[in-house]
Amino acid sequence: MFGAGEELLSVLGDGAGRARPLRIGALSTLSRNFQLQFLRPVLAADPDPVPLALVSGSAAVLLPRLAGLALDVVLSTEPHDATAYPGLHARHIAAQPVALVGRASRVAGRSADWLLANQPVILPTESSIRTGFDAYCARMGITPTIVAEVDDMAMVRLLARQDVGVALAPRVVLEDEIAAGMIMQAPGDLGIVERFYAITAARDFPHPAMASLFAADAVNP
Image (tube, rainbow, N blue to C red; front, side):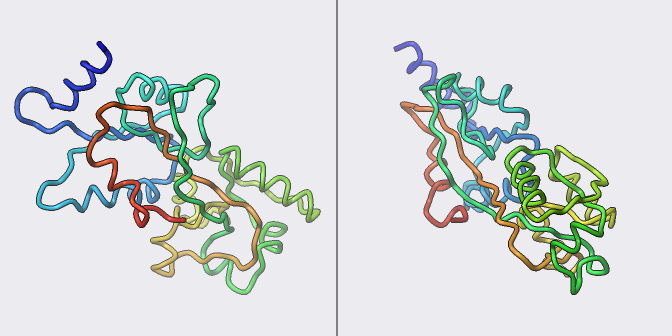
């Protein structure tokens, strides 16, 4: 009863007529492009834009806040530990193939396998991508030259733009650069996919903007 009462007070706003913000948590390693894509339905709300409170951090920081109803949703590349957080629900909202990308001068006319064997490689340390990459290289007998290992997709993007090497990343990370012709995607399917999840808590009074975020056309399949 007391929990429901506290939640109701937060839904009503701060008492000064201001609407309650939609509170979004995201892993600090998560692609900023993907976050923007996820939030597009509420960013485009007109005539009453939804106020946002955006927080980034590790799962160890964000999930307790979500369980305590201090956040409305947490964006992650992995579902949560259901044993540790039985009151949370992870919804799979998108999947992106992981590709090898880089400057045209490095990538044009060359296969992904050739690039992995002959060009410096920028790798994310995020576990699902790295596990798939290591398995692929072992299967193909490739020993890559790793020039950088980065735990932030934004830095992977910057290093690829600066031509430090070819980068392993979901296409969404560099979609603007690919569309502009600055970066090319190497041909070939590595068979690596990054999945995205929206983790929520059971609430008596969910934020009204949540429905638009989970509309069928709001996220990628």
